[in-house]
Length: 413
Image (tube, rainbow, N blue to C red; front, side, top):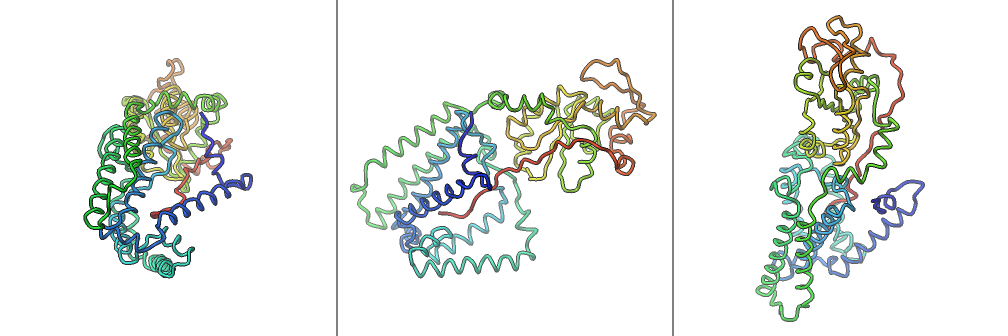
């Protein structure tokens, strides 16, 4: 199933309408913030005195509603969660940054997004808050050299979600978060009643129906479940099988060889052969993983993804590597390729002059068609051929980096 939003929201010279879509979304977002009173610093600061907790209820309401709908669409196969940008977790810098922002929120009465809303509606305090934000950005840029290692590396967990942390099914986590939010909303109203003298009897009853509907959707996520890897690939099969048939995803040994020495790329080589074959011979830097374990590697590959990372899967021929490729592609791991002809093809090209490696052409498919003097692993010369000796190799390049969409913004509303 093709989801229409990606094509609409992809900015390019051929798609100028995307800018109008962004403008409309931004205008609608700012308008909703303004009519909700989020451009008023007194209303925003009142949440810290427990007299007016609209900000908490609106923001958490938006978060849990989006979460429930996103994972409903994921369960129905409309949306691929692997393609959604999730902020990389740097635990300690995020904790410190959250504390700094919270203190600024209490003192200034705004967060970055709401200060812009207040400024464009002519509020002087919002203008000074925005100027303070700009000064803080400038100050950070001028001083980050003194702590850049800390804020860029401390507490790094990659793409780390509640499902990863709790090790629970997605539907269970969604239901728990929604239940927690509903309890928080009830508690917020009780605080408003005690500290803000709010008469809850006058509140609209529709909010109770909305809470019940949200909880029902969350429970529905449990019932729907998540699509299996096989179901995910089945939806991609028409395009991906065509790419396999057209040899668009199989790279020749020469291209892998040049990629090994390309400092602009981050190469990950996955060897899905048996441990015995791997110990006999493998490419230097290749990581062995059994075909059954490929799916378990997906969270790590997604969590530590880099825009310049290329993954090459290899087996003795191509059959096992192709199955591993399908698993990774189905789980939305980007930039995955197959070594054309597998390790046998690599050895036929780079190991032909090595006396300790002799061909055995009569070997059956997906077995090594070479005999080795000893199980030296990556200590054969063919494991990492000399870049000088093979400098002039020619081939048709097939590696094209598929960049994951980054977040479009940050901060709070």
